[in-house]
Image (cartoon, rainbow, N blue to C red; front, side, top):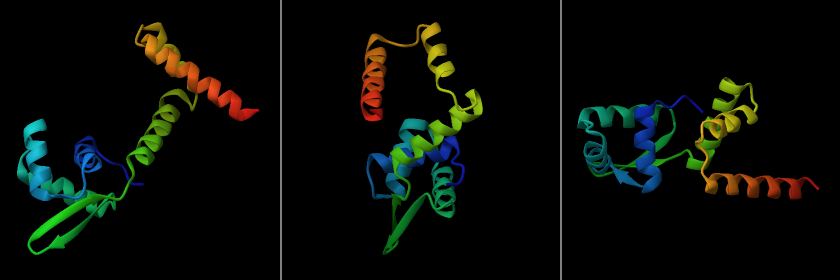
Length: 124
């Protein structure tokens, strides 16, 4: 999977939310939410097509875009890459940093405990 820029990710998020979308629909959504200009959005769409992250289908004069990358797949890849680059592949320093700075809510801790309990059951 080729590197996706932050701006390109905004386009992908629109397509993950609802697809297919026309270029006009993507432009409208990003103009409202992120003050992006039409030409910028169309450039981003073209880049994502070249990177094979999205596809298009031409219907008359209108292009309909859809993601080729699943959101879960992208999130998993990027999470692993981040942890590898920043923490040498270890999760403990990441979670410890959030805990130390009081960035974990009680709900976060409960979810982490559940995940760990489930993981331990699977390992047995």
